[in-house]
Image (tube, rainbow, N blue to C red; front, side):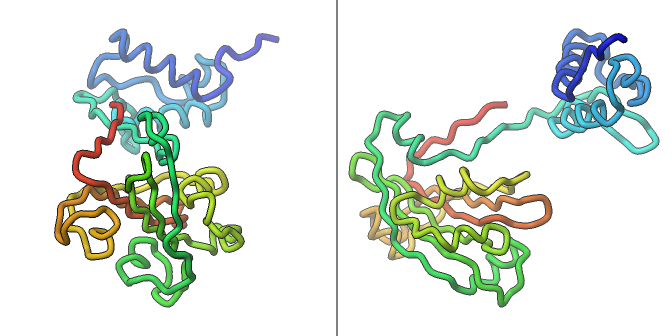
Length: 233
């Protein structure tokens, strides 16, 4: 019996990528269907489907129902952004990390938060607010809401020693996230923490992470002007 050449979707993806980059499949060209590729690669059709979906999500393939799959005529470059452990980020930049819990409570969030997280308007969530430090100076303010229906173990955590940022990445799996970047004016509390005048510009990252259709957490991270966010495309 001959073993399959391609045993997982990643190996199928690598071969499809090779063919695209080598122009064996040209931009705009219709590629073989999943059933034929499964036979050629000696693997399950579901394995091929998973590989092609991944490449479609990255913008390299254009998949349309009943029309087949084509190599994208104009591939869209997409940024890959990992959720960083802020402690690691500070240390990798050569700083000495510190952490202070500002507030931890269970409360009903603002409607803008429950709407973004798709939770009931009257549902209580865990609210954690904390300060991350670099060399004893303010580095980031973390303002986070946690859906304890999805992450019930968070109710047992004090977050006095370990940040919610780091704890969630260790204990709460997620499938995807929504993220936005903006410049905002510092409110009085944040201005005091950063030691800047009220209304000063701060760099904000707003993110909601999801476990399929259910929200895990919503966080706003605030940084002083000059903060640099690095990613790859």
